[in-house]
Length: 340
Ligand SMILES: NC(=O)c1ccc[n+]([C@@H]2O[C@H](COP(=O)([O-])OP(=O)(O)OC[C@H]3O[C@@H](n4cnc5c(N)ncnc54)[C@H](OP(=O)(O)O)[C@@H]3O)[C@@H](O)[C@H]2O)c1
Image (cartoon, rainbow, N blue to C red; front, side, top):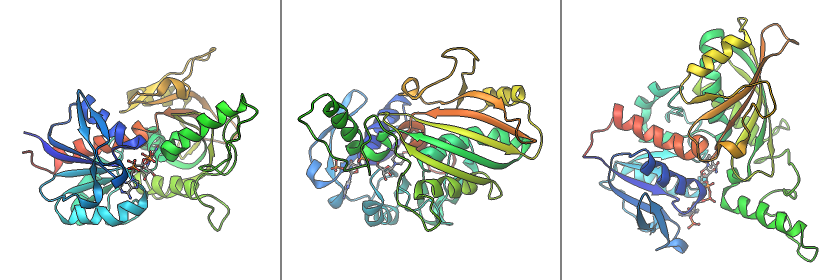
C-alpha cells in the first residue's frame, strides 16, 4: 500500500537525486514514472535496484497518479504543473514559479510542516531555493529561542545549482586550463567559472540585487517570519556540489554562542561540527550525498549587541532540492493523503 509517484525532470541533476532519495528512504511507492523531454524518451534512469525508461512529459496523462515531484525549469512547469494538479495529482515543485503565490505553501519540513494543509487550494506545494532551504533549517531554532531581527548572508554556491550544463562547463573549463589549444567560453555562467568566483546568480533586479538574493529574502520571510530582515550576496564558486553560507545573525535577545551550539545540536536536520582546530569544520566536499545541513564556526559577533556568526554547508541537490521535495512528499502522505 503506497503511492503512485511521478518524477518530472528525471534525467536532470535534481530528478536523479529524487529517484535515489525515494529509494534510499524507502518511500512507499506502488508505481513510479520517470519523465523528461521528448529527446530523452527511453533514456534509462536508476530507481534503487531497478531501471526506469524515461517517458515524454508532453504526452503523459497524470490522471490516477497521487503526486508528481517536478524538477524542470519554470517554463515547462508553467505548462505542465497545472495539468497535473487539475488531474488530481499533487505537484511538489522545485522551480521558483509558485514559491511566492499566497495560495501555494512553501515548505521546509523541519521549519513549517503545518503549512502542508494549504496544499489543496491549488494542489501544488513549492520547494524553496537551495540556498534558502539550508539557511532556514539553521535559523528556525535560533529564532524560536531569541527572535531573529536581521540576517546578513554571503553564499558560496556550487555549479550543480545551475543544472547539469553548469557542471559540464566547470569540468570542461578546468580541463582547458591545462590544454593551451582548447577554448571553452562562458555559456551557462556570465564569466569563466574555473578557478574563479562570480558574484552574480540569476537576473539583476531594479535595486541592484540579483533575483537569487531576492529569493533568499522573500522565501525566508514566507517560511519563518515576515518580520525577519535579510540581506544576501550570492556568489557562484568552482565547486561541483555543496552550497556554503557565511551567516551573520542579529537577535532581539542575547544568545550565547554555547547555548546556540546546544540548540543547533538538538535541532532537526542539523549536524554541528564545530571544533576550534585545524579541520574542525565542514566544507562542501564532505557534505555531498548527506541529508544533514552542517553548521560550523559558531561564534559571537561582538560588533553588535546580540550577534552570532556561523558557517552553514549542505548538499544543494539534496536538502536544497531533492531531499526537501521527498520530505514534503512524506509529510503530505502522513498528514493529508490516503495510501493505495
Ligand atoms: N540544482 C539545484 O541545486 C536546484 C535547487 C533547487 C531547485 N532547483 C530547480 O530544479 C529544477 C531542475 O534543476 P536541475 O538542476 O535538475 O536541472 P537540469 O540538471 O538541467 O535538468 C533539467 C531537467 O528538466 C528536463 N526538462 C527541461 N525542459 C523540459 C521540457 N520542456 N519538458 C520536459 N522535461 C524538460 C530535462 O530533461 P532532458 O534531459 O530531456 O532535457 C532534465 O530532466 C529547476 O527548476 C531548478 O531551478 C535546482
